[in-house]
Image (tube, rainbow, N blue to C red; front, side, top):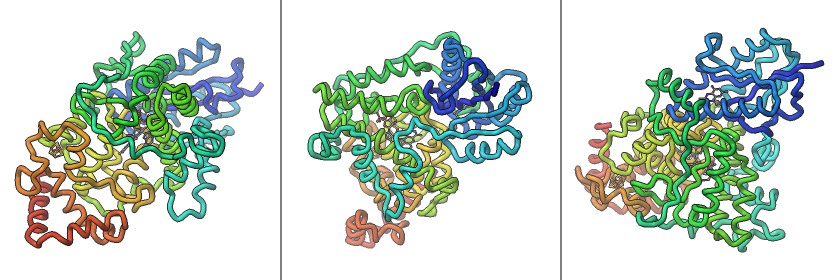
Amino acid sequence: MSQALRLILGDQLSPRIAALRDVDRSSDTILLAEVNAEATYVRHHKKKIAFVFAAMRAFAARLETDGFRVRYVKLDDPQNSGSLRGEVERALREGDFDEIVITEPGEHRLAIDMAEWEAAFGVPLEIREDSRFICSHAAFRSWAQGRKQLRMEFFYREMRQATSLLMDEREPAGGRWNFDAENRKPAKPDLFMPRPPRFEPDNETEAVLTLVADRFSEHFGDLTPFWFGVTHDHAEIALQHFLSAALPRFGDYQDAMLTDEPFLYHSVISMYLNVGLLDARDICRRAEEEYRQGRAPLNAVEGFIRQILGWREYVRGIYWLRGPHYVESNALQAKRALPWFYWSAETDMACMKAALQQTKSEAYTHHIQRLMVTGNFALLAGIDPYQVHEWYLAVYADAYEWVEAPNTIGMSQFADDGLLASKPYAASGAYINRMSDHCKGCIYDVKAKQGARACPFNYLYWDFLVRNRAKLSNNPRVAPMYRTLDGMSDERRAEISQDATTFLETL
Ligand code: FAD
Ligand code: DLZ
Ligand code: SF4
């Protein structure tokens, strides 16, 4: 009888994962391995490592309860070879397998390594497509083929039609594809805040926390309090809480920021979804049901579904389409080193401090904090996009390269020359002031344009446009800003350059 070794990665914890299709309980072995190589390819946030290990252990226990044969390798197993390749090799040596079955990984780094395994081990290797994604590689390639621009909005409309999500016959529900124009309200601190459910660590999770504290003490981030769910049941509670308590206002306050409310009306499910504790199709269908049952308005439900059916599927398509060198893109030739305060959170800029402190304590910030605060600052300051990419990959509990890299390199840093974004997401302090309560507690003056007290985002914004004129001035969406810049006096332009130089030298 043939015996298969089925490898499940730390972000593939779904009972319906492709590698488990046709699994034979009596002969096959399912391998999960906590390995140093995966915990350190960037210095992941301690909470992220603890989350992945604890969720892996919980999933392995569930598989065992369901009668599967599981080979689970803990990080502190004395025999642990330290890498996935090493653990597969060791399992093959110690067992009698005539086949390896895996689901494609979420990163070029591992995909390149795994493609060599069949030859290296002399055992047939089957690599299955990851069917958790709604858009297959072939479907994305065929959508992208022959298009000059790969805009998310058009991809998203086709996904709506292909899945029938939020469709009334052949028309989009409510007569429009996109309700974003209604989704830009600043939040007030006195609003009811739904806040995500917090879960007490069980004994196994406590053991993981001890292990991570011991082995990864040098890594970034606060390990405790650890409140993430680690099972499918926990993730389901978090999703249900979001659907009933937060989704109705998700649209309205999607872009808002408040210093003391890290989560606002966001779902805080990306870490669960990305490791397989939740399913993208299921989430979208259930969000639609909230609208159909009259429990959530269309602007909220459409905005939410667009993030998952649109953005999430789209960035994954781009990642695999553009290949392993995409992360090295640097269209704006930005060379400055990542400032140390990205790790320490020691900065006087109140908006940056809030986002960075929250990153350190929660391994989470919401999209606008990532894009318009930490990402915007790195863009304006001309930070090397590869260093920005490594930072985002390390610090968030939901970060895997297939989703992080296009968001950072493309959407946030414009390093792919506009493949993803039709214009750079660059903004002065006025945007942050409009969407948040940060500026009133800041030592900088958001209204001041010049001098030591002026908000750094203000002069950095114009200096960014000056530095990147050759690349950006012909972009029709940026051209109006160049007209404003060109209307400024020489003296004003000199002040901008002086303020920016003085500030950037302090980084
Ligand atoms: P919500 O705001 O509630 O959105 C719902 C879901 O939609 C999210 O859980 C997520 O699955 C999906 N989603 C929303 N926006 C995006 C997007 N732009 N791309 C892909 N999926 C999206 N998301 C990650 O999952 N992992 C990352 O490593 C990651 N890195 C990012 C880096 C940068 C620079 C930026 C600008 C964005 C990044 N995002 C990333 C996208 C987004 O910020 C997070 O998905 C979101 O903040 C997660 O919080 P939430 O679950 O509360 O999301
Ligand atoms: C993120 C992560 C971590 C921290 N540790 C492990 C691990 O020990 N074993 C494992 O199989 N996977 C881990 N992962 C997830 C992988 O890094 C992830 O599968 C790849 O980055 C591809 O997305
Ligand atoms: Fe941020 Fe500028 Fe506002 Fe300070 S004044 S919080 S630096 S936008």
